[in-house]
Length: 349
Image (cartoon, rainbow, N blue to C red; front, side, top):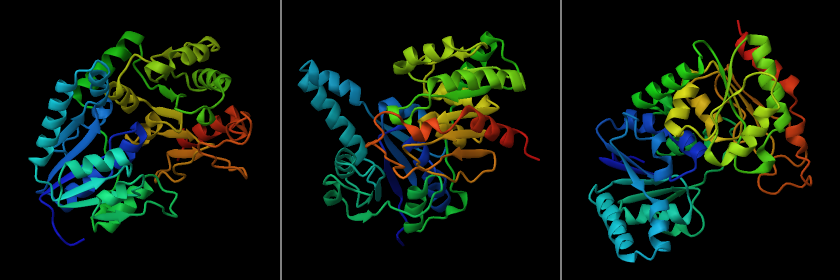
């Protein structure tokens, strides 16, 4: 594309990992169009991933949970007023480009409501393709992290030299992370583990996490910190209770920004296909990713961030597992294999 937009809206409402992947577009858009106004529309639950990024001029917030509550409580007048205010604030920007990175009907509707001159949809479906002025197929042969967003950047003619995920936790979150670590008595390097994700076929075996935490403590003398969301607390406690070592369980106690700050200070991150694992790579930490039923990428672009993935004939099954709950792909990723990967990245020449 040859026109130089003066204002750009990115629409990527969720989820955590996808926003982290898509954040790589921020530096390349800013590099290519340094004078353009750059705005991102996101679900309020994910705003901490974006609001501290100095390369964004504004983060527009869709308060989806609040609107759902207003609708449930039949406060239709307040809901309509808030909806109108958000649409007005977006249209006031007079966007030249609107980039719908989610490609779903809900994101496509917001892209249309924003009133951009050129609306570009990445992999648009569910009818959202009819709301776009241009559609770009997100399929690619690349196994690199963020490959579909890199494809979009190339299609848009952006300078991709600085293409890299761009997440900033913010000073306040970094200060809070320091306080948490001080309260735990952690002053040196530590490992952060991220066992939790949205679907059972993406999980690693709980007992493996306990054994891995014990082995990291024994081999390196490092504390191990476990991070996750409020919905993961019961499973987190089961993992912690199996440990012989003092696994520090912070699950459900930190928001996205503080979790990111804790990851940024860690000496190592290990996790499944979940937003915190991708965040660990984005923040430049040595990382081991454990993939099975999903494999969003196999190449991280760094020698100290590796993916363990052993494809079976059914891999990746995504949302349609055929193993009857055995989840063989994840079971084959043994603690020994994870430890070998950790040794490899921590003992690089």
